[in-house]
Length: 195
DNA sequence: AGCAGGATGCGCT
DNA sequence: GCGCATCCTGCTT
Image: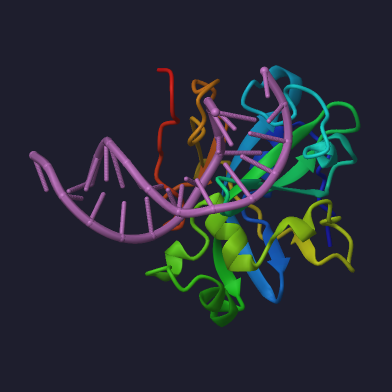
């Protein structure tokens, strides 16, 4: 088996993560949509303004999970990439459930269709039961509660790119990547403020 | 189909 | 206090 390399820059890592499997709480999902966030050169990144207690996982070694809490209700999960001191992350935006479907449905009773279960970053976390307690988890460790495994490689021709969702700065960067035509990919929404 | 608004906690100016 | 890397409901086209 090939081992997953998460030490590259966020853009390269984002493309690599498409098609990989994410497993937590007995549920496995195939990643279909991601966004790259690139530390000091990216005003939309949580690490842009330096290290804080909340984002310190981003400043650690690659391959760990950075989980944060937004809008008082939701968790979102990122894969940390690059190396110490040069923080990058890939936001997991959508996935299709490949195993543990009943568990995922129980976690997300509001989902109307199977494609809705893990569509959107907060829904993805809810469906897989990922919360703040998983912050910092080592995704490549066999004993980790959240794990990442390589799957069938995605041909470059199936990857599409466009602007990131819901941010109010750096809206022009095409740092969102998704599997072309996949039904779990979330709709584009422009961020608040500014234009 | 598309937008506006509300819910709700927490990190940072 | 304010502003979020969000989601869902309800109302308008």
